[in-house]
Image (cartoon, rainbow, N blue to C red; front, side, top):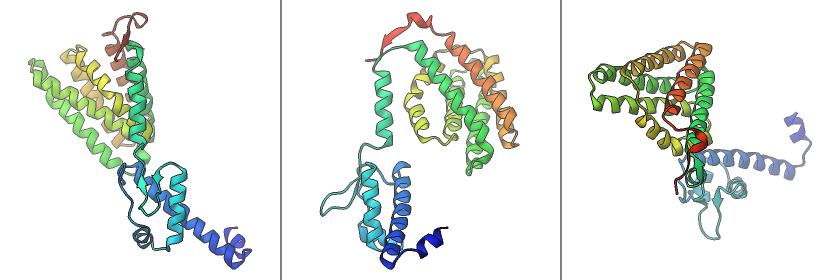
Length: 265
């Protein structure tokens, strides 16, 4: 269908079509580099000639690609200067959302419950799609590393070793962060990263018995095994059970939600 469409065009229209197709592909590549921070906020893109060489094309598709990025608010184009990545990128946008939440009058217990439920939802989604991840082995290695560190800390926690307790909670936080980021949703991941210190504070303030921490470390190990073996339903069930139990324990630490109005400002 595409070939027949191109065949129906005159030479000038055909050149316009090819140029637009190239510019869209180039714009998409540059957009991806901006959003994943390979092109830093505030940095200047290479010159149009350098970009043309890199993408093996002429300057015309480059100019059109930059206009597409400008229309999306991703770059600023000024006369006589190279295009510049806008400073109000995704990280800053998400940070502003998180700051607004934290600086507003808010029910602390409700905020904590909502944040933990977001973590459950995102982690469940990540477990469900884990077997289809391109970089599955990389995420799995990170999860196993955190799980093994928790398991290694448990005997020392039974001996009331404060450093081991802190190391366990640090590894547990990293486990959850890895699972959230495996979901592949950049916006949710950034929001989680900005608000996770609140979760970390809650976890550090909650009193867990050594036996509870030992059981959780085993559950994380079972979860790693399920993800490794492609047992999706089991992995999802383990995420739900582990994180729901954790949510219940953490929320026991808070007063009645209706009485917990505070301001972080």
